[in-house]
Image (tube, rainbow, N blue to C red):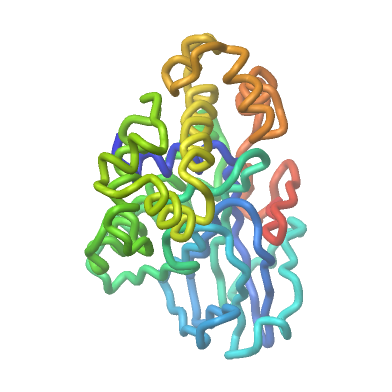
Length: 318
């Protein structure tokens, strides 16, 4: 599995939510950091993306803003300081009919268990895709998502998640085309990048730190220092996270017995897998699987209302 597909699989563990928002006159809103990925799609008008560290960025119709790892940010009708923006009102109140100065889609994958995939953490906090970037399929996806949000019917849950997945993939592919480089964009250490490739391609292998350091041509001590410095965690801890992330994906997407999944991701027994999973996710593999199967996606009617509310640490999407 390539790293982009693996990343999308990890995001799919979260609940997909989206809703359409209209603003007129003087407006602005802020979303605090959360565990997951969020996006905005400008449908009409002009506004500004406000972040903590970079200058405000103008947004126009068709622009897609992706927050790969759920970083704190805001939108506004004029450039403003992020702390001056009020919290976003995502309570699910009906949107007004008729014309609005600014209209956009707001969506998120919120991870209730586990952590944001390391690949997403290696990307910039914000990626903006424009219709001028030469990806006509992205505009088509936005049209399909708008239509899907305006109606409900058989298969809505499947289409909604699939469209959000495709939207993320196209934004990331476009960014990677214009930013060629290593597999992990913000990881500049070749030895660490090589180790990441080995880990993600073969997480089931009984890797030791000595084996990983040998395959990248470094001493064990130097490799551990480099890896921990670049990734923020030791190699063994990182490997465990990758294995359990793949285990969570298999729990959600397959009916394979726990013992089979355990072997597929490098654990010798179901008990060892279950113990590690509970430590990482705070829930047993069985309960995680049951919860994933009953988790709803957003259900919006044509007025922007939906049937349930979820709080996503800043993205409270009804």
